[in-house]
Structure formats: C-alpha cells, structure tokens
Image (cartoon, rainbow, N blue to C red; front, side, top):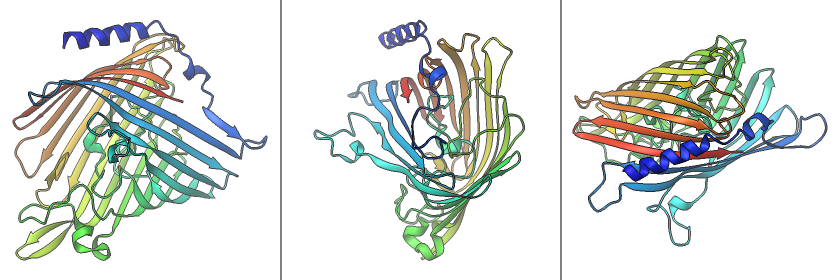
Length: 404
C-alpha cells in the first residue's frame, strides 16, 4: 500500500512540472473541412482512460492491485450541410486481465457501437433524429460525458437504466432536442432492450425488470424519457447530448433541471399464478454550478440531485432499487496559470435508500485532478468508500486520461 502511495505521489509531483499543451491550442480538435465555408466537415475525437486500482475487499488469493483500460473510444460526426448530421461512436470499456483473451476475441475485448444516429434540423434551434442515441432523460448525470467528469467516474446509480432497458445507456429510437431561449430540452421514444442484465424469473413480492422479455413488446416494448434545464447565466451547447462535468471556470454556468423516464410494464411480478406488469417510473431534479473565482485561475464546480426511483414493488438488483437517491459533488480549482498544470481537489457523496431493505447504500469519495492540459490530459487520484449493510469497501484509484 505504501509503495502504491509513493508511486502516485511521484507521478503527481512530476506532472506539476509540465506545461499545458493541448488545451490552449486545441481549436476544435481533429477536424477536416470540405470547402471554405466550414459547413461541410468531418470531426473526430479519440480518448483513452487507464487505471491502476487498489482495493481492500478482495479474496485472499487475489491481488489488491489491478490495472484496467477503463475506456478506449473513437467518436466521429460529419455533415454535408447544416441541415443534417450523422454521428458514430465506438470503443470498449473496462478491459482487464479477466476480460482479455489470448487472441483478443473474447466479448470483453471487442469494440462495439455506443452511438449511431442521424439528425435533421427542422427549425432554428430544433432538431429531430433517430438511431442508437444518448439523448436520455432523468438528470444531467444520466447524460454525462466521459471526457470531462469532475470525479473519477460518473455516479453509478445515476446511469439509471444502463443494461436494464438499454445498451450501455443508449436506446434505439427517435428523439427531439433544442431550446426555447434559455430553456433546453431533449425528449425521446425508444424500444426497450429485450434481454437486459436482469434475467431473473418472475418473483413473488419483488419485481423483476423483464417486462418486454416476459410480457412481449406490445405491452412492454416502449420507453419514454425527457430532460429539461434552464440556463440562467452562460448558455451551454446542446449540439451533442453529452453534458460537461466541469468547465474549470471557463464559463459561468448555473442550470436547474428536471427529467423523467417511463417504461410502462417494464417490470413484472408474480401475482398468484399470473405475471403482472408494473410501470417503471424515475424522476429527478438537479442543479449545476460552475464559475471562475476572481482572476487568479481558481474556480468552483458544484452539483446536486434528488432522484425518485420506482422500478416496481421492492425492486433491488445490482446498483438499482426502488427508493430514492441524493447525490452531490463539489470541486475547487486551485489558483494558478491556465497555461500550466492546474489542480482540483473534490469530494462526492451519494446515499441510496431502497424499499426492499432497511440499509442505505452510502458512497463517499475524495480525490484530486491534475490537469496537465485542461480536460484534454489529466491525472485523477480518488479514494472511494462504500457502505451497504455488512459490506464495506475502500478503493484507491489512479487514472490517466488523454483525449484528442
């Protein structure tokens, strides 16, 4: 453990000697224009996140320290004119020694599509589209970008339908998005996945998220979602669905939002000898604040959300459960030159209550980001402690990320 802390300390101290490169000169990244007016182009973004993790909750015959490629992604979007756009996003997640294979052909080693959609501008500031998309409802964190999160990773329970009704937080369906002055919106109608993570047979007294699989697509095939946020100060871009986690004081943003997710008869429960469908209903309100503090390079980022989760009667499976959730995080950028390495300590806290059990799942995190080149190149060191019933887990993780 002492060696791991020493290694991490050396890495962070060394990073403080480096100067910013990509962030001040990024200028839109890798973009190929076809013509002089900039209306025809191909834009590409690539990023990778590598982690070294120490956990105190492992079997006696397992190592406490492990390595993982957390994310390796490529995103591309292009337009021939301003009327329509196509986006493609592919990659892999959480590649480690257990998911690798000798020839790279295992399921864990395979690239897959995260997003593939086309969209059309039907009016100024209003767009419709369809495909495998990320225009989700519920909250800001259910639409979180993985390029610029404040903390090491997203609050897990905020990706509230991941693997239950969708493929890795993406549904296949149609969406509309846009804005009315300072009010932004995104709404969608989608097909639910037929076989999700919850493959349990129907139970008595406890719902199972398997409505489409067990009842059929006529009764349980569609989901409905939306998210609406009012931008009080600087206006955020809604060109793409991915919400920014921290602007490092580059904007003054204060947004208040609300969202929902509905899946009629998404869950089922055994009622005597018959299956009974139960509606999945999730609602949330949240607030996001990001602002510079004076002219010395310091900045504040704060976020809070309350979420009501109804997955059906006494539902509890993995990270999901019928009940409620509160979550918040707070980060502070230490004063410094924006062209040099910047540091951002932060704290996170989540509390999840479940109808099915008396215990809450409480998750506390404390960490720091070292921005070598803004969000384009950063190191993150985080300790997370999770308590749920008799299970107490402490995890220390160092992550290096670069995106171009």
